[in-house]
View 1 (spheres, rainbow, N blue to C red):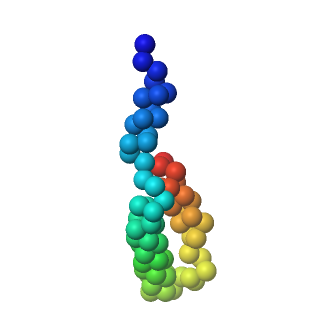
View 2: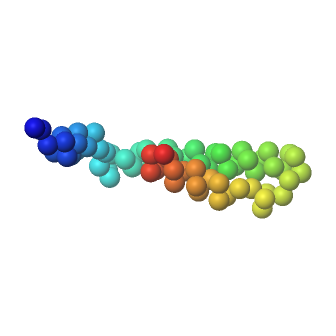
View 3: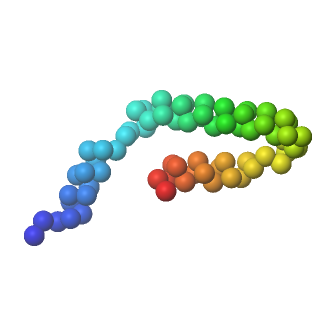
Length: 70
């Protein structure tokens, strides 16, 4: 019987992205986060809502979930 863990490890090593290759992805993610926050600030100001009320915690939770793959 084939060892499933060995097959999984082989597959994982084939598809994983190393730290250097993921730098452009992290840079793009940071640009998107900044653009979203800037857009929300503009929207909040247009709706006369305090910028301090912007849900920063929700941003952190959402992007942490993206990193973890949920």
